[in-house]
Image (cartoon, rainbow, N blue to C red):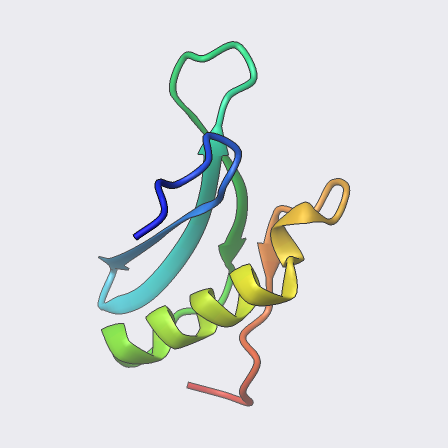
Length: 78
């Protein structure tokens, strides 16, 4: 298993106000803490749905878009 590079994104999935969300972080350039580079604006009905959409966002590189802070779910409605 390969070690994760320091610049690799990390996917976080969490429940907030009864909905599931995801966020993608990368290490801060200064080495102190993590920087949120993308997150789901809309909530998901399940943890699995949020995780699948977050993994899609990581694969498609949505977190690399300049100034991109949020990503819409890839499916319609929750």
